[in-house]
Amino acid sequence: MILIPALEKLHRQAHDPAVIDASGELDWQALFAGALGFVQLLRDRDLGSGVHVAILAANRAEYYQALLGALLGGVWLTPVNTHLSDIEIDYVLGDSESAMLFTAGHEYSHKLTIPVCDLCTVDLQTDKNTPEQLYRQVRAMLEQPPGGTLMYTSGTTGKPKGVKRAAASSVGRTLENWCRLGRDIGLDGTGCHLVTGPVYHAAPGLYALYDLLNGASVLLMESFDCEQCLSLIEQYQVTHTHLVPTMFVRLLRHRAQLDRDYQLASLQLVLHGAAPVAPDIKQGMIDWWGPILVEYWGASESGIITRVGSADWMEHRGTVGRPLPQYELSVRDQAFIELPQGEIGELYARREGQARPFWYFNDEARTQSCYREGWFSLGDLGWLNEQGYAYIADRRSNLIISGGVNIYPAEIEGALLSHPEVADAVVLGRDDAEWGKSVHAVIQPVAADIDQQLLQQRLQLFASERLAKFKLPRSWEFVAQLPRFDSGKLYRQRLVQS
Image (cartoon, rainbow, N blue to C red):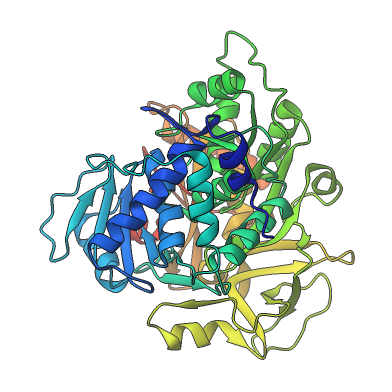
């Protein structure tokens, strides 16, 4: 018998909180009744197994009803970034071949050729069955073909790409796999899971789902705010959460302004990834919250490939960890020759039992470009040490070649971010007649009214004490706000265009 802790919650603790948002809370009965209500919505519109639909949602409980309903109903659900322009949203809807758009807490008035349904204005919980009846209904669906998610990458340097992962044979097997994925990274269903980022992103949205399926209650922030984050952890005795490095920076800066100590002892696990983190920033969070940070490396395509706890990270400072049991890593040069330990090359991974763990929707050429002789690449450069710990140097597309020398912007950004007057930083390569490319630093200062010329001088001295001369920025730029996604990734295309 397939055991899904969330279903057992429905069966035995139906009125305990399952999902809490700014408008209230859903218990386990309401969560599953809403998921079945979503299935009925699909059937009423003849949207059967294998069909693609999309959802444009704020951080609301309806999102998780739709996510579970899509799985049970056999459809593919595309979460759409609410910060995209109308043109960008239209692109995702068209590229994903979505037959319908659902919204929840986010209006979309742009003219569309597909129907739109606002989940906040329909009663998803039309099924008034008892928890026992709901439990039996869901269990009866476990052998059916599953739906899933068609996730779109951030599109940091071009148009976003739709990603599908290899699916299990049934709804039940999919739920089992998602529960196991959660347990593999410490999301074991205990306590309360705080969602600090937007649910349309794979990391905050899906990791919370895995914890929810393992029996945790999920608490949704509308948007990230340092004071509210600390307050919610204390009030709800949060045990698990996911943060990105820019949130670490903001929290550490906010700490200096606190007029009281928040009680954060309930926290057992803080996942982070999606973007590089400066070692000094991470160490500051460990010093404050304790050795509960777990870093991972992966992508929308693969999910988590490596992970590392705080204790191992402090022994191997800067690492993103060792591969999960189902993965193997290799570092290769441009000719696909394996490189020895310590040498930087392109990181390749392969997953046991899956020749193609993911593919790009309707783009076989792009899919094939990721795979080589049973291995796949996410475009990251890095190296492995003698104990098998992986280190990320940078994205292959970010590499700066200056005078024939490889320069990795992430290393320079990490050094600059450790300066107390820097709120955010990015390093780019600029065309240079003599060197080919030169290092250009774009800085978001903590203080908006700071003397930029004096700050530049301080940063030049600061960087020179930490970096080799050839890595130092040759030009500087100061901006009020860097264009980042809520995932922490930089929208480089917008920065270059500006």
